Structures are given as structure tokens and as C-alpha cells.
Length: 311
Image (cartoon, rainbow, N blue to C red):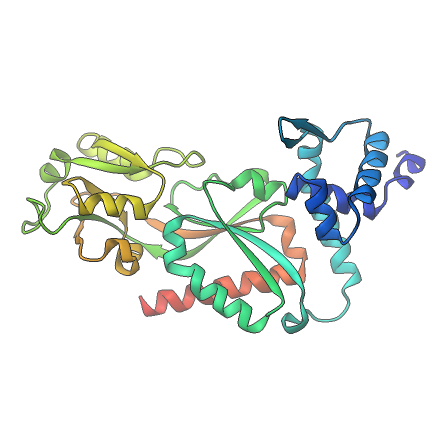
């Protein structure tokens, strides 16, 4: 262990690296840390010299983190959380808390949980700032780098990406899948059969992080693959396409019951065994050392239980 080299790196350097990995901007990092841009640049220069790595380089108009900086992200995030917990001796007080948390979720989850969660959190912690991202823009890598605190997403129960990068998965809501179609669809007045289901084109949802959905595999094994005519990035866009075509959309019943985009569409149970589906909360394991993040986790769980009991 090189104690002399370690002594040259302080919490100031680690916090600056942590914020820079989040913002990828010297100016934005300076604003968040209440420092001048020149002070942030000076700290980065010291850290670059100590680590013998550029850490961030310019590509066009953007700063990009080097592989070493990205690898250091989860460790630095954990060290900052543990130091914060050590220094915070008193119980967490949401009413006086001033801080920011970032969540990412599918558009379908916005309909179910985002509004209720925001209202609950801001009522108890008015100084807390929530940043809610589309999961298409911020995914599992962002959790590992400390850029996100939580992800909420729907998925087949058989298919979370296990515990990669120390990620923890917890089921929030159990759900079932249904088929949506417009009220003038030729199948609207019929009980949906597997032949009917396979005879029409379908709307698919793109997702780069999860594997081929289990229900797709089940369908192909038990019968045959369905024909995806159009792929879209979110549930709302798929439902809107249903309103204006004879395409079928397979989705979450809980979402279909509350979403404005799905209003007036016909909902039918799927005519085959598709396994189990749910909405899950995902986070980076060491992050629960932070009392504030632990409190936010408890609010997410509470809102989910309320939604499930009403459902």
C-alpha cells in the first residue's frame, strides 16, 4: 500500500470525480459544488497527475470519461456514501434535507408511480430535488457509475439481469399481460384465440438492456413467433398506434387500466401461458449506506404497496 500516494488524494478529489462523472461538465460540476470552474479544473488536474490518467477528454462539444474514470465510478460512489453515513450521526430528517436523487423508469411506470411518488416525497422533503429520466436515456450502467440512484421497470420475472454490477432487484408490483386493440378491430367482439393473436401484426417495444422477453420465447415454443410489424420505444406510442390501426399491442394490465393513451382500447387476456411479469426496483447494492437514499427507497416501497392495494 502506497500511503504517500494515497495521502495526495482527498475527499475533495473523489467528490469532484463523482460529480464530473454525473455531469460531464466542468461548469455544471462547479455549480453543483458551489465552486468556480477554475477550482474544479485545478482539482481535476491534481487527480489526473496522481492517477496518471486523463480521466475526461473532449470529443466534439462533449466531455467523455476515460475507461479508468468509468471503472472508478462505483467505488468512488460507495466511498462517498460511507463517508456521508459516518459523518451523519443524527437521524435523517426529510423536512430539512437539501439534496438530489435521480431515478429512471419506463414510460409505463410514469403512469403508475411517478406522480404519486413525487407528491409523497416533496410533501415530506420539500427541499429534495427528484430527477426522473427515461430509462432509454439512463440505464443499468448509470446505476453502476453512480449517475442514477434507482431504476423502476416492467419485465418478465424470469429475466432480470441477475446481480450484474452489484445490482439488487426487488419486486414492487406483480402484474399480468393483456392484448390491446382498437374498438373497431375485427377481433373486438370475439374471445381472443391463439390463431387470432398470431394472424395480426403486432407492435413491439424496444429494450436494449433486457434479453428477448420470456413470453416471446414461450409463444414461439408453444405455437409460433408473432409478427412484429412496428417497434416503438414506449407503451404510450404503441397504444396510440393501436387507436389508428388493426395492430395488436401486448402490455401490462396495470398500465392499461390507468394510462390515458389506452383509454377506449379493448383489453383481452392473452390466449397462451406467458409466465409471470412484474415491476421491479433496481439499485446499486452499496448505495443503501446513505440514510437519505434508504428513506427514498422506503417511500418508493410505500407508494407501490398503495398502488397494489388499490389495484
